[in-house]
Image 1 (cartoon, rainbow, N blue to C red):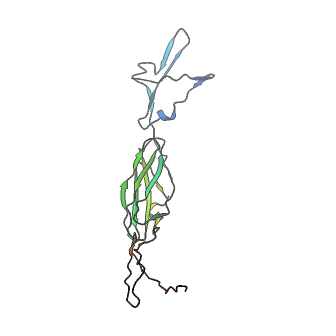
Image 2 (image 1 turned 135 degrees about the vertical axis):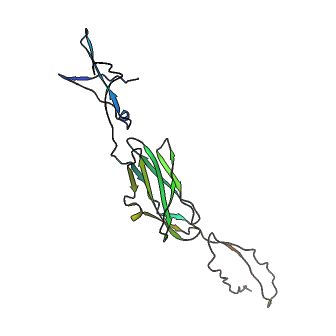
Length: 212
């Protein structure tokens, strides 16, 4: 049995010592005292102190802490990454992302993946191929199954992401060569592409008068 020795500070006739917070876990804490006057040595409990120590149980009533910056807009056909920093005094058990495309009623639930260095959890919301809104919220549990929601009302008042069109159509055209015959109709074409749907394409034309 391995114990950590903590020297105690005298506040006569008492002596005190602090057990570090990181050692106060849900496993509970075992401890005993030893004292000496230079000639005699005693322990408390008196017999077999290391094998028969004093102890106390530990409970966790604190909920995890979630730090998250809401995503308000995302381009159509993109898959926005949801990132949240989640911490807890005892330890984080799991973090999940809930999302739905409005006006759907049911949320889809997926696990968020942790970066152990930064304590950041992340997951991606699938892309929308058209304009729309996705509602989402985050739920985190600690090792004692305390949980916290972000935002605080969860599915009752979730965050909303508006999927918007941020790309203009592209137009490609091979110019008509000079010297076309007067009076003959000319067919003019262009390739028009867009990340969504092309709404309309219009050709504007006018006659060009040459200076004599």
